[in-house]
Amino acid sequence: MNCYIHPDREAAGTCVGCGKFTCTECTTVVMDKNYCPQCVAKGIPYQSTTQTNALAITSLILGIVSLPTAFCYGCGMIFAIVAIVLGFVARNQIKQSGGRQTGDGLALTGLILGSVVAGLVVIGGLCYLAFIVIMLLIPSGSDYSLLPGLLNLRFLI
Ligand SMILES: [Zn+2]
Ligand SMILES: [Zn+2]
Image (spheres, rainbow, N blue to C red):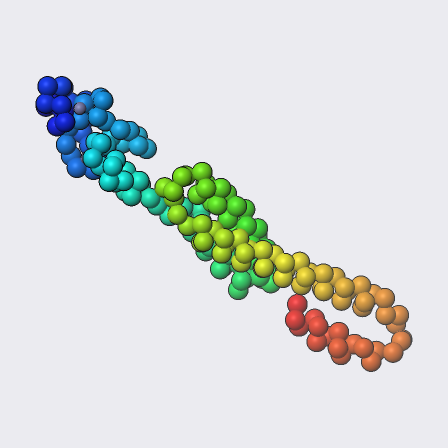
């Protein structure tokens, strides 16, 4: 077979976009795949390889999962931290992909959800510590009028 642009030249490859044969001069390689000049002009290599970043989706899912598990013995904290890390990595990968990857909004949402949950867990943990410290500081036999209020706080944690 010969190149469809240069009938006198031997074809070196086949265009992935339209299936026509192209010579070395006419072949454009994008992401290890061959394309003819027409398909490159139409932007087909970039359309067909545009995909949502997998880490961005994972970050969003973990961010969502971290919400109901936020105070489940630190499970939420683990999900939240992984969501934040994956969110950062995904946004970097999307930036470096030059438009071939999407999902920046998903990664950002995962990152924000993770940050909110991590913040809540830290605040919850601090409240819990503060509660223990207050309980330890109350001398035995002293006025316990504060205690009902503190017990209510315990249920929030
Ligand atoms: Zn083509
Ligand atoms: Zn050619």
